[in-house]
Length: 503
Image 1: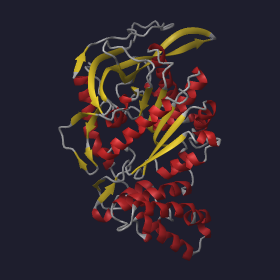
Image 2 (image 1 turned 90 degrees about the vertical axis):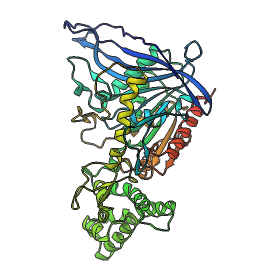
Image 3 (image 1 turned 135 degrees about the vertical axis):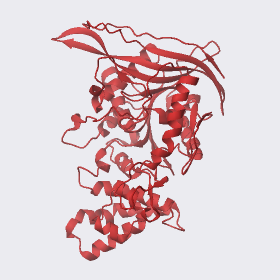
Image 4 (image 1 turned 120 degrees about the vertical axis):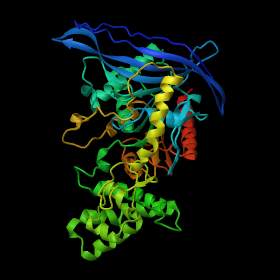
């Protein structure tokens, strides 16, 4: 049930030396009231959706020119309220985004954390159109207020009229815009004294630790927790393009083995047994063989190739022809080539039709195809019909406007933000971190993320504040009802525990 009201929230601040006749951009948020039944009882909450103007200080020749509007970032926020519609500012608040870069927040929003979820079916059993939404009794709203953020050019976020969105299409500016929105929200909503969390998925984990460090370094804002879903903090652990393949091959081997197991290549064996063997091979004989290069004898090469082939489900001939180094996109098309099928990169459980029997790579990721329709339909319907937004912009689930993502700050070295995580964990002895891994995830393989955590330069007391959760899923643990519930309950429990540390 819902009760609709509308409200405009207009930002203040000067536009500096602007002399244009363009209208001053302003925040516009539409507000509605709802009630949902959960395992913890009924929750009454206020939903607000719309766009918030992000401004930057402008200084020219050491003279302050004012706050210049740069972008209008889309948010959808949920606040639990009392009978009079008043929020409890002592409740935790969690800021959520997905990754890409170039993805909107629709996946975590309507997949697992929000009060409504898209009904997308099970792996290889997707729902047909037209699609549906359902209440989410496991919503994180039980433990925390929520703000879902769509970074620049995703969702309904756009540059201001006359501005350039591409100025924000890069690591540094992306961090600055998201951090500024969080600072602004906490200031206007009186949430500086609330327990605060960031939750990100995929590149959203890169963003989350970078934003956490920026919030502390620039504003002194400390957080209670980070939820890092399918994380990638050190891109060098999975880079098949610019570095030697060896480290990526080692990171991907257990995931290849897991996917091969899922598709019947290890008949009669348990997944845990297969993963254990793959992890042992990657740490031992496989690592040694890759390091040897052309110093391997023919017999040594054949022996390792046979082991890799057996674990990955690929033929020994193929493993030898690719110099013991199968690349993940090619693995997707090679594993089930004899069936005319490919497996998904985002979720290796999901199969699709191979567009050509001789294709090196798939023409589209079937694991994205399987969920795009339900989520796209759900978010367009939900924001307009249920949350009463009047914006006519197309909601960019994935942004076509982002042609190039700038990593200029990392020029000449791998993209790596591990130091940001180490910094905030050293500075804040109460910050807790939850890492989530999917065994069938070829986008951010679990072994690479585990290796990153294993090499954190932190004392034992800090490492004790890190927890881990593994799922028999792909990149998105919430694809599939049982794993969705398990993930939702795990995140809710984490937030509740981390919010009460020291209280």
